[in-house]
Length: 149
Length: 375
Image (cartoon, rainbow over all chains, first blue to last red; front, side, top):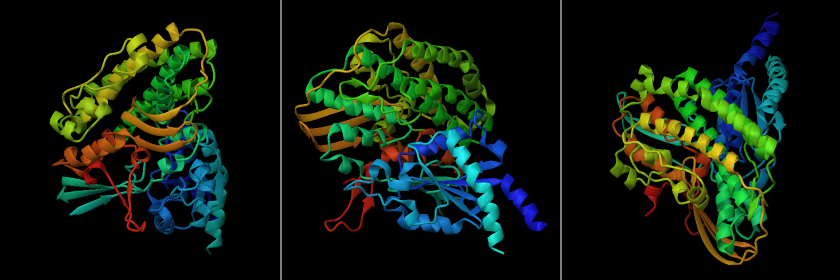
């Protein structure tokens, strides 16, 4: 009974923290575009506030630069359970164009924190980002929440 | 007390650490820590052909990605001594101005978010989406367009698309004054923006402020005046203001948008027929080219041996603007929330700004620096 109630509540209020771990910020502005009235992220119960301490979903963009190697893990541990990590764009998956000789990036993100879902694109379209969050987050958050018991 | 903000913070879009020295609620001074997005782009570009390097240039910054490829291509055109065909130059102006409109609208929306004016924030983002559609119509992508090549642009634009862009611009212009009036005459917006975060003209010169930030403080400087396409074929005038506060910087951006719309209309009405791409033989040499990005002046310095890039150095506007914000604007700001609003008003783009890394001989002890730290 309580679990079922928690599932419903968690599905309809997803708090998102956006972490740019060293990309070109193209993905970040597509997330900002999601807030616009055309896509209207908040009608799906998703709220972007960039605060890891109360996040359900951590959106990671960027290819993990030197300074993020330790800090990414720290941000991940600060988010309360249950949490879902979505890697957004090509950078956190493969390093994109930056993953070449002489660069200071350490892709992929999954070397540092566990990643639940990946979305490729440079950058992905806002509708794709929305679809990815909605496809992964509610189910995964509910499942992880039950696991903990 | 030192109040650290960031790198992940509700008020900031991009990772950066802002250390505010506060006394009570008052902010006395500010310091900035860089280095969260340093990817080493210039180093990767070395030893590559331009065909490979231009993709890296595009990904220096996501918001003004267009101007980086244009400047990169024009640097190579300067080295080779050949210009792009006139139709390609017009198409470059068209894309550049579309990119400028969306960037300015995004910058202003960020400021309205920082002063908690959600209504204008939503209006700005709603205005921006049709412009993104226009960019997509023309180039096929919303953010990283891949539109420029050395010697011209990648493909020709269809007349029907140009007409559709014209319609989008007419629609944007029709409803635009209402939002400017909301900003200009809104009493609450005025309280949060007028006489907050002031920077005098002398300080702007000392801090090397460029773009709308410099122009908001009375520096009459816009590189589009000197650019050959704008100078020879288009009607263009520099917009600037004297006040030097948050209000002036945002108002300057608001005022530049109708001018960009007018430039787009001029381009669509007068665009000549012809090729869009020249075959360019790149010789050996060194070239330097400057362009006006939405945030100010972008400089590319490239040394090539004919085929491969030997050395490249990129100077982006954000680093000067963020540093002059920390040094001159965040002095004696009344509240912390005003300090965040001031920081948002300089339109910081951290991905642009991360250009310098200083390491000792063994490669240990790395520092990431702003311009005032370099000795």
